[in-house]
Image 1 (cartoon, rainbow, N blue to C red):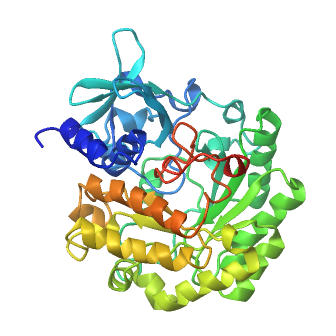
Image 2: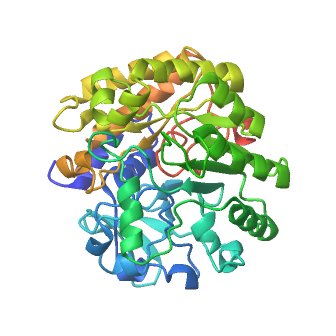
Amino acid sequence: MGSRTALVEDLMERFPHVPREAVFKEDLLRGGVAFDDSALSDNEDGDVKPKSYFIFSFDHGTLPELGEAALRRPPEEIILTGGPYDLRRTVVSVRVNPSSPYRVAAGEDGVLGLYLDGKRISDVGVPPMPEYYRHTLASGKSVMEVAPTIQWGYLIYLTVFRVCQYFGAKEECQYCDINHNWRQHKAAGRPYTGVKDVEEVLEALEIIDRYDTAKASTAYTLTGGAITSKVAGRDEADFYGHYAKAIEERFPGRWIGKVVAQALPRDDVQRFKDYGVQIYHPNYEVWDRRLFELYCPGKERYVGRDEWHKRILDSAEIFGARNVIPNFVAGVEMAEPFGFTTVDEAIESTTEGLRFFMSHGITPRFTTWCPEPTTPLGKANPQGAPLEYHIRLLEAYRSTMEDFGLSSPPGYGPPGPGNAVFSVSSFMDSLPANEEASAV
């Protein structure tokens, strides 16, 4: 193609039913973006909400490799608008890559823009520092450390267990850097609480509730690493569930409660429901059997792919199919040396998984794979999956939803280009806007 611009424009022309905003968003998510020093934040002392590193690094380099961006964090997210492609408002999670062909920088007029191949392609908006980030807990911890918000303030992300008990090469998911991210933040001397105290979580939520007068925060997610034994004397369902119970008792009905955990047995899933969780995310990661066994060795060893899927279907009987939303990591299907070698094969496999779950009324969602360099798949595939894969996945995803008469899942904000706030993939940007989904 000769240039990144030519590739992007070719895909927009070939797939006109995929919003042009989603093409740029997927490219930024899969390959990252560089930041000029003029576009970095002043961390928690400035007017821009900084990147919180809420669970994974989502960067294409380690902190020592990011230069000034490791000292002055980039913004949590950016918004793209306007430019020669007349982009509608598009929220994109920030994934830093100093060598990316995309760069955020201030123009001569001081206004931030996104540049590709040296040409300004859109205006860039950055999230303002929320008032609740300016207040600390009694312990001195920041709200950003305990209860950061993402998706332009829509979602409170509560990573209450910052490491994973699937540990080492024989157990860790091959694309996941949760354990490394913990290590690098501790090595850098940054605050990064391993197990968050439930009372501190409630205190942080109290601050958010008090100062979020516009009620922009609508949902919270409880998540963290897998628990194969116990943490603080609790098994996985009880550990994550007891936070939900405390939140729902203190703030009944204030937020949509979601939990990301393993696919657990029916009785454990029932505990989540009893604790007040409304949406359950038992992520299946990758559909293909061989790739699941290779890429998720701990999950295969402790649970197994077939049992994992059975538990997902069982959980729909407890939460209702619409409220079971398993994630997969879009792009790892094509990771060398084991992944599919053509986009056709990868899309066929992933669509098979979508059809399996959607035929049961369950609507998966996906996160666009960021090949973090400390992971085995990231090291072997620094460029990630081809952009064409991601664009065709958006097309296949929407088509499969339409085949089964499903609409956008709850707890993700409004769908549609120009409306969506979900920032780590474009699936919500690519779905049609509708009144029902916009209301949740």
